[in-house]
Length: 408
Ligand SMILES: *Cc1c(COP(=O)(O)O)cnc(C)c1O
Image (cartoon, rainbow, N blue to C red; front, top):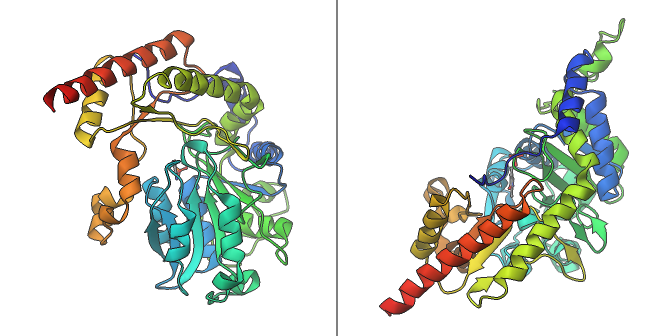
């Protein structure tokens, strides 16, 4: 049995968690601080705030921005539901646009979708491959677009343009223009969920990179308080004797990360260069083998400006329909190899359909989806397993494609 994406748990991870358990302090404290430091070192930006999930972090940042009824946030249709749900929970309307061949948001479609109600663009680094950051950043700051902007909160007035947030759930460890994710947008949020490259079981990390006149260090403190009910003292400070008094300064959320969770990610991130290198070598091996077949479309991994975090291996197969793709998946799964599909475009899901979104407006997203199979990729995957995945995938793709050509 080859699982799809088991968490990376070794003795160092167990040691770090046990250390937290034995320390007498298991919720937000020193381990979270240390993990924030490690992530900030990895991306090269000083202000990183850990929270209990990507989703709650995104809701909080959009609430901080201050959305009013009817405000719009532009997102790609090819993403996980959380991207859209965060917008709705924060009181906004997700405006879905189509994607490119690289699976990421199409900047021209973003431009067309901008209205005077647009308050944020929320892009996704699909599979860990960075989106077109500079193009989106230039677009939201361009005169043509800022002229349309109608700020309705203090934060929006201070910013003076559409906020650029990145759904970087997949892209911790990716690089854009030789820097970590977070430099070319205002806010980026990583997910530390169990299936992601680095995990705290559940968790997220917000990289704060607001332009002047925002003070990112102050903002870190403000947002951190917002993750703790806007309480002026966290539980750790209050646990020190004589330090009991506190105040509540606003409508906060309760979405802080616990130390016992942070411990898992802390041990992993210390080994991340090795773990990432292993992901990359599996990715390269897959691509070098699939390249030999003209029915295969290997996923993007490396350009002059971008390098993936190798979170997923989204193989696409040319000229197949959804049914044939599903058949290939059944055949591979019957061999005890777990594969997946990333993602079902949002307009195909019942909730979004009922809200009126239609897949007809997202032909590229549909084409990516109908031809996509995500193969297992993680550091613990052995060379033998990689070879078996390759052989099995090739055999069944050829089998299904040959059956197709015989019937036409
Ligand atoms: C995993 C994922 C999320 C949600 O992350 P959580 O930490 O589970 O909230 C959001 N967006 C994308 C693209 C994801 O893959």
